[in-house]
Length: 366
Image (cartoon, rainbow, N blue to C red; front, side, top):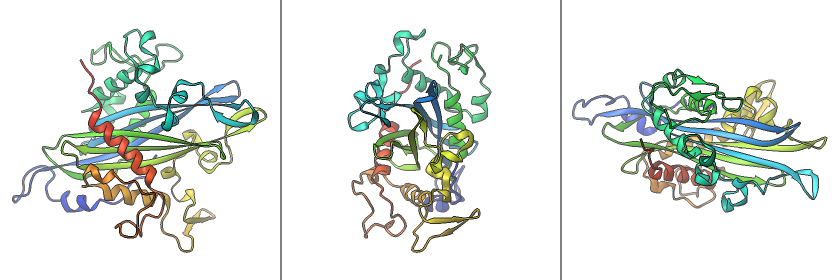
């Protein structure tokens, strides 16, 4: 997810240049903080057929030196099978634990499964996967991405090729899972981070992660909403980032495949699937592409990524109660009504989940 804001929020314009490090002329001291989101998509195969799509996401905030202030990781495993009644169709695997008890969630993430994921019983350190993710997040905080990469990792076995070294003791007995996708997602979160905003120097910040899903049976597609939000201890929003992954499937000669003709798949290269932000103008909501050039279509508002950036920008400085938005779209009286014409309820829903994680996730224990 590499769409990057090239503008500062109104709050940032007002504050960043005036007081980033110390009191100046009576103005309160503040610090520069940016928020990003990264997702890494991988595919597990059963022979020639897709068995499961894995999405590893990092939601993180960074200080002006590039050090991680707060980070959360989560992973969703999307299992698919051929429809038992019509093998030309793809369906979610209803017997998978992350699907069968998910209810309105459609699919549960590893953070949501908690003990039900079932790693503790087979873990040599008797820690569940969500506990290990949180321990790794706690270790990452206060470090730059480069420092995280340089920690040192080893191959434990064919399925665990990037396990953190245990020699320095920082992660000894705490993290034995392979973390290459967590590190890659963190790198992307840093690359995608929004323009810095000014935050009161004494504010305590937590960044939460949100992941919600829907299944489009007609398209055989999972729509994944992913979000990062940075919230202060007094419930003010200082960073927001949202994106969408549309993961389409098809059946080719009896095997499940990612739909090769889909825009987000066919030119994704090593990314496997591109998010809506990564597609940029190529998403094609309001832009027409001809010979590599993009022009606004008639009566256009703005492209998808431009509209969600308006939402992200508007949220800066708002209280978390601004996320309590149940309408499908902004009404005519809302200040974003003329700028954001897409349906927004899903984005506010995933931001709300991310804010809840920011406020409620317990910290790892020593």
